[in-house]
Length: 210
Image 1 (spheres, rainbow, N blue to C red):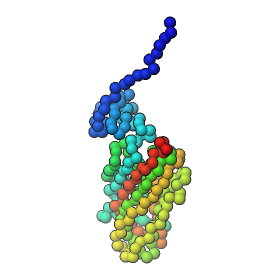
Image 2: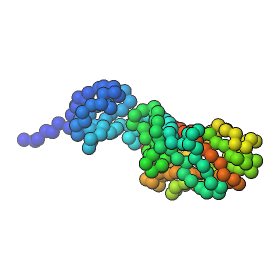
Image 3: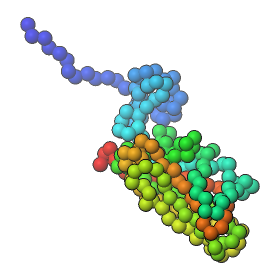
Image 4: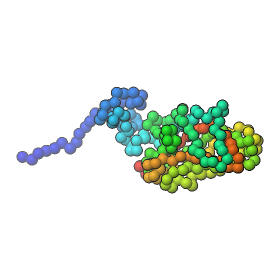
């Protein structure tokens, strides 16, 4: 007699909201479904199993540095390249699954190869010799990222506070996803100061779906 196998299985997955996903007692293999994603308990975390890539939506995240403020400005030494610091002391994001920056390594992250992102750096700055000082910035890491760079000149006014915002668009290759990149800045011509640093990162295309 031939053996018949049931090749169709229906598993009931509990539908809930994000607040329960964030606070539930996690069990390996247990699955939860929200309007945005399908989660499964794995090694003490609820991981996103759908959509692919571990991030539910395109979304955005804002990371505020809380170390360098108006009372504790970061001094940039002339012609010395440094990583733009951000301790991510305050984070606002469109979804709890989003992680586009790691404050411990000061690296900007990519989710999938061929993703597209828009990165905005907002900060305040001043220079004691504004007419002879400008800032150069660039993303630094392995892969095709070196041309994401630019120059920012100071308006007139020595030691005058200026609000700045620089926007960069880039895509992630395999090395970006593997290693991450850092945002570097150099004060050219003279020293300067920066503070109230904000990283705003928006993921505009999911490479796994393109």
